[in-house]
Length: 86
Image (cartoon, rainbow, N blue to C red):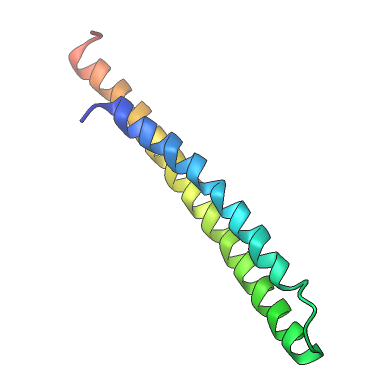
């Protein structure tokens, strides 16, 4: 495995986290449904909890991606210091 592969995985993970925004938007639309009051209230509560959870999940996924990028950079720097450039 090359450090660049770890960095690329990190970038991919961060890009993938953006897809969670589309899911959150779709979930938010549930709260806009024209349903009887009790059903609408339940859907609104569900949408709020899901959206909050998706927001936290996105933050965690982005952190994972940044961590992979940082690990790649640190590995490369450590390897260069131990083995020399090239």
